[in-house]
Amino acid sequence: MTGVLVELARTFATLSLVSIGGINALLPEIHRQVVDVHGWMTDQAFASAFAIANASPGPNIIFVSLIGWQVAGLPGLLVSTLAILIPSSTLAYFAGRALTRWSHHPAVAVLRDALIPVALGLMLASGVSMMRTVDRDVVTVLISLATAAFVYTTRRNPLWALAAGALVNVAALHLF
Image (tube, rainbow, N blue to C red; front, side, top):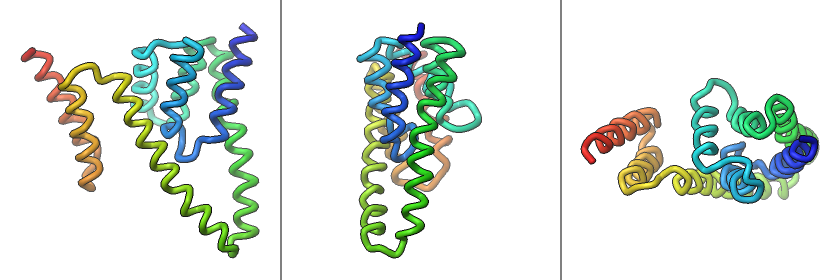
């Protein structure tokens, strides 16, 4: 059990340091590590944990806690949660202090502007990764693409797209 806890800590502490854009931006790499590299979960279990975490109130970080719980129970939950939180929080603290100190420097503005497309690209990759994980037929792929288009082109609440997608999927299940 200790070996698994060490691997959970190493995996999530490393990922924590590149979590620009939040935990959802890391989704493709978390999936690769948890499913492909370590074999801790199946694609379906991964998608289910992601869905449960996003349906739950609170921060998205619950997702990593659920993975730790699934892999090694309560010790895994604690190790995974601390490993994903502590490195990035420490880095953010010191980076925030440095940015405040040198906020007038032109390089700081360039850095801020450069991180925006990086975060957006990571979030886009997360969406594609989840589509590849859970979309198994033409209907679900079309629902995902339509939902993405809806969110991108309108300012309406994304829950409308999710509700419509759920209804279309239920109807498609009964028709086919």
